[in-house]
Length: 84
Image (cartoon, rainbow, N blue to C red; front, side, top):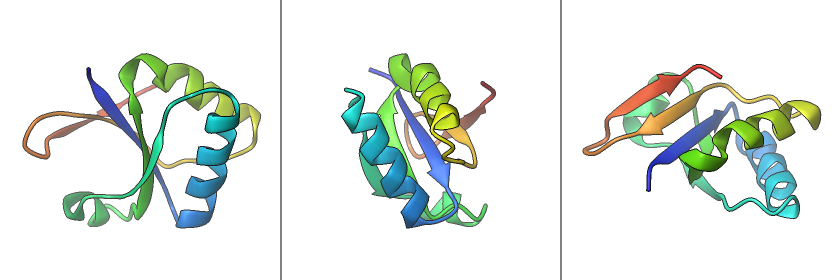
């Protein structure tokens, strides 16, 4: 299964996003971003399956929850920024 990571500026919007997505039946986990991502100014994020990321991003937009970026996570801390 491929995993994505949606980043947020701080823990509060990440927690709001987690609550919204879980209430809507999506599977996600709140995580502190890896160190290499923190250099880009991202501190918290949600980890979720790639298959759900598009619908989750739409739900966040509808709910007025802003996020920073979406990454497709690879092996050995490799990530590719996604454009949705």
